Amino acid sequence: MSERIEILLDEDTVDAKVKEIGELISRDYEGEEVHMICILKGGVYFMTELSKRVTVPVSMDFMAVSSYGAGTESTGRVKIIKDLDDPVEGKNVLIVEDIVDTGRTLTNLKALLKQRNPKSIKICTLLDKPDRRVVEMKADYTCFEIPNEFVVGYGLDYAQKYRNLPYIGIVKFDEE
Ligand code: 5GP
Image 1 (cartoon, protein in one colour):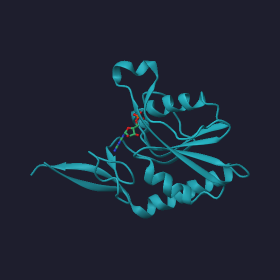
Image 2: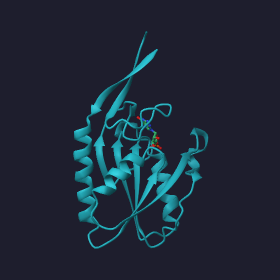
Image 3: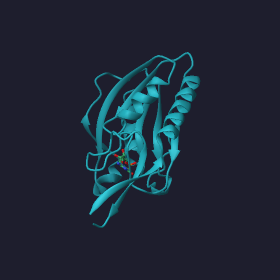
Image 4: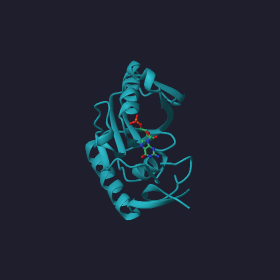
């Protein structure tokens, strides 16, 4: 089997939307500072591009998490693989994520970070697959709602490949 990538959202479309969301965030946080938290690794490309479009002062930090498997999801916890370097207390936290799928990761992560007393906490996602939702979760900023397909590019991987694609594509498998 070989795989090919079918373009879902091309580079110009993604860039234009990221710029638009960056401008919206700049307006919403007028007179404030925003502390962006990138969820590794998928959120890296989105956060760097988004932050370039934000005109209020930006600071940033990075976190890697994994959600517990199906058996323990009701406990509502995330496993921290890499924690933040700095405290979030008193800051306007903006979690920057690649994609919301079932909604478990962000629901749990938001609850965890809330316990650290930020001034405010919001979520910004590049992609959203609303059809896949298991836990009710609505991001404050969403660039694109997409169908229930496995996508790569702009930070998202398939077996650690394709993160560097400048567009969003669907992975298709061809019989050889
Ligand atoms: P959930 O919302 O289910 O807790 O998990 C979201 C995470 O699942 C994302 O951060 C991402 O790592 C992974 N994920 C969900 N859908 C996709 C997809 O279509 N492509 C890729 N590459 N990862 C996905």
